[in-house]
Structures are given as C-alpha cells and as structure tokens.
Length: 275
Image (tube, rainbow, N blue to C red; front, side, top):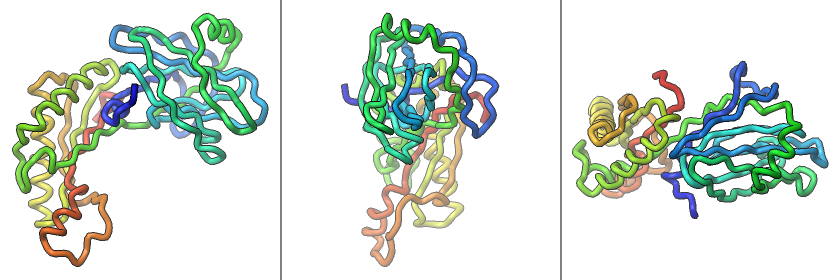
C-alpha cells in the first residue's frame, strides 16, 4: 500500500524513553514493552552485531526514532496501517538510506531487524515475532531519543478559500472530514493541534495578518465542529514566512499565481499537551 502524504504526516510516534537530556541521544537500560490497543500498532527495530563502526539512524515517516548501537533496540507506536521506514548511516551523513513501505496489523507489534549489508549500508528486514524475541531476550539496552519532530499538514489556501476570503469552499469539506477522522484515530498520541494561517505579501501587513488568522480559525472551527476533540490553537502569521522566491517584476495576475504557495494553512500535530 502506498503511503500518501497526508497519511505519512499523521503517523505519530511515542518512544520508550526516560531520563533523556534535551538535544542528546542516549542509550540506556531496557524499558518495558509498549502496549498497543485497537487503532494502533507498534514497531520494534533492533540491531545485532555489525561489520563496521557506523551507527544506523532509523526514521519513520522522516521522524528520527532511534540510533542503534550493536545489540540495541527501540520501540515506537504508530497509528496507521503502514509506514515509510528509512535507515540512514550516521543520520544520513555517510549514507541517506532508501525508503521502504511496511504494513502493520492493527493492535499488534511488527519487528524489524536492522542489518548491515555492506560497511556503512543498512537495511530493515521484517521478521516474525518468535525470531525477534529469541534475539531480543538477550538485549539489555535501548535507544532513547527525544522525538522533537512535529508532523505538519500543509493545505494550499487556494484550494480552501476564494481569493481574499475566509469562507471555506464547499469542495474542501470532504478533505477536512477525512483529516478529522485520521486525527481522531491518533487521539491517544496527538494531544494538541495548532492551525497556522499564512498569506502572500500582496496587501498591507495588518490586513494579511488578520486574513491569515481568520482562515486558520475557519479550519480549526470546522475540525472542532466535526468531531475533533483535542485542543486546537489558532495563529495567523500573515506574510511573515513566505516559501516562494523569484516572484518579482510581474503584473498582478502573474504575481498572484507566482505567490500561490505562500497562501497556505499549516496544521501542526503535537505529541504533548503544552501550547
């Protein structure tokens, strides 16, 4: 099953980590096993002895979840049926690794052995539970990482609103309904949502900041009114954070088209309840 972008950013990981200092990757004593419920799954990644001193970095949906020394493991929760797994070498500095898609059974744990196929080259091999547990019973250390990755959904404002409007277009409701259902599937891990509105640079700063806030509020209100129960924060940043370059010396029509990527609403899915 292919991992669509929306699905990709909605998979939320909770690491088995404790006593971890901010900004540092630590390796410590084994922790208890993560329990999964209906609508969730988990993945255990582990590594046996390697053939070089290189350290693999394990990414799930481009979120770093572990760096594995020999005879070490990590476990992460997922709340979808498939993920994108990538194993890089030293965070991608030596080798970026290739991405593969792995499917999960609802309510179960999937085991992935990280194998060094050549010096500095790692890949993930899905193994059965019996084989994995036979190895893991001798592991006493786990990779503990502070996961600071905040999944984001970026929605083009032109697909949500008419130009200079904050009224949601009828055609977008199905997309937002699906997004709300997906968020609720991850409600045990998504603790708070921030909806951030952005505009292009056309118009005054005050007008753009107000429009961006009203658009973010329209999206946040729709999600809340259609079943999303986690707290939702609203923010408007106007034209302060453009993503386009080179949109100069154009007539108004061409400029509006060129600046289209700047007009967007970003939804951040946060793992903690703090604002």
